[in-house]
Length: 194
Image (cartoon, rainbow, N blue to C red; front, side):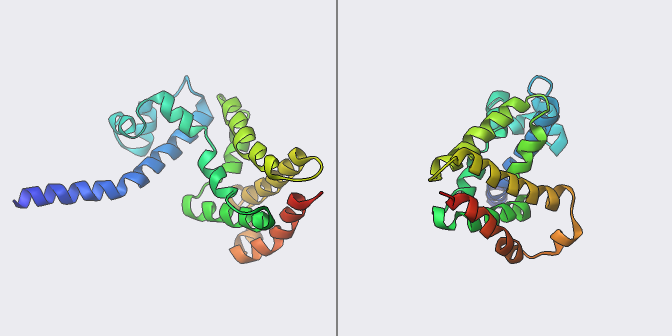
């Protein structure tokens, strides 16, 4: 009976860790695919980077094609970033991006930039354009919504690059509230422009 309880406790512990394991594997896959392209990456490479077996990668993603499709997708981040009414979207975009920085140490905007000119980068770029920029543009009223959506993304890319890539000291000292207060009016003016 003690062995059965220990087995169940281990299974429950693994169940709780599954989302974290999956995210770690996905992050490793995104990095590998963005650096080397689809053809030059194996499931064993991704597993080795995380220190697990290739079988565990298969357990979470099924196969290389399914893992690649998820690695080059921006759908989840776009859902999070765009989940606010237009009148509050400027503030929400900054706040959601900062939360991604803190929670995952990653930035979908920077992923699009850093992968664009790498092997397999065309797929990352196309997905970013379709899943983030076009979705944002579709929500914007007025003149030249596509340009305005790109300008909003450019502002967010600059913020992410300064915080995560350059680690600008003065910017890094700012609280999320201070950054939201400064960026919100800039972004909202682009979103509302008629």
